Image 1 (spheres, rainbow, N blue to C red):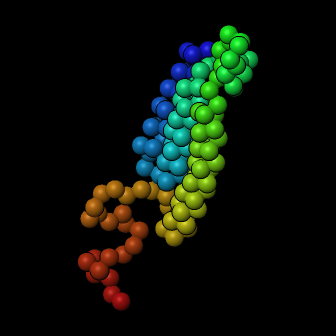
Image 2: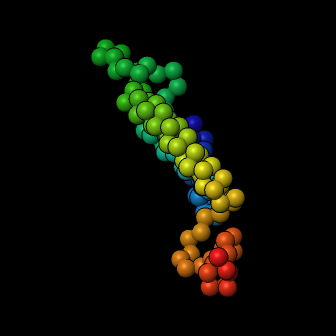
Image 3: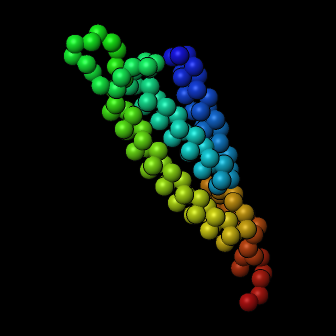
Length: 124
């Protein structure tokens, strides 16, 4: 069980990092979502991976229990990440509608050729 969960965390992290390194806005949003899913699975796994274990420690029973605190943290993180993903999608959609592309330009001082500049002899 631990190998499966660790593999899932690794695949989600690798996919998230790959998508974040893309130069488009929407794959970056998908990558951030994948990374948040990887963190959620990691937090969930910190509460002991025990099948059919009660979430509350029983004083007189000698059975393993799963910690309910990471489950509550993951539930809260899922709600927050869903809201933040919606905000990022709306910001990216607004930028796409404004610029007609979703490229991320990280180079300073370079013109991407979408708008005519004053230096090229454009008359007003």
